[in-house]
Length: 402
Image (tube, rainbow, N blue to C red; front, side, top):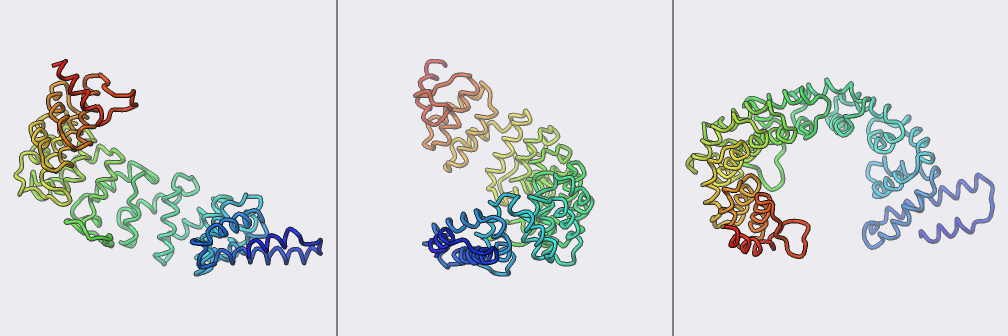
């Protein structure tokens, strides 16, 4: 069908303008029909690609029917029609898209947003902000998605207050979870204060209000979602969160390591020595007393040993030395990586022991650590980075440089 349509267009004799427009619209319709074929994404993928390219090349005359497919409730051609429209230059697409935008209702406008925002962002931003107060949760969800994806745009500044209120709990429970984003949206400091407040045991996050179960089952502390907040605070490097993080870690008792799998690494990264006492309690706790959650007790202790080392306390060295002999390679590798990153010349003997491991990750970590500590490069074939293949060379080097 596609080849015959193109042939007809190429060979058609001159005709009145009305007839020519009619022929073009028939060609557009035929090309979109190609995209509706049941095998458009399968055996007929190449025909689909040619149809998309042809629709893009047609430009302005193709836009109305492309928008028809995009805004239809269930049109198999919608996805590929969107690709054709996105590839079209503004000179060809902008006017027709604006015309459709002005006439469209809320639901159709959200389908047009990905295209119209590229040409007239401010009206789209105004529309999205207005939708934040819609009674329909689905409409608000789309609006929040747009606002958070484009929050750096000044046109969305009026959404700041509404976002802060919603993050604190003034929004439908299920929608709140989508507001927990890694990067600051509007005001990093005020958002950090709200996030720190969400670490309290009576917060909506701790209660898991509106949280949907993930595929494959839930974590032991479900529906408590404060680990999500911890990860965000860690990513944003919010140092003033340390007291709240320590309170969460000890919420079930000192040394229990509640949510330790997320809290402990963040405490190490934030670099506040106030965390040392509680981390030491975790390190010295009995395995059965730890709130293992997603991580086994020995891993929680390993997290504590690494975090302590980051904070200048090496009391976890002996524990990590024992972990280098663990039967599970993943624990041996974590211990080797910790020593490699934070160890000193005093730890060269530990890394030397790791050179006899049968796990490539342990060997690589040991080689990287020895290279960092000694300043020596033992890389065969002028390799660009340290790796497990360096291990034999390090063994020889250590024999000669005891």
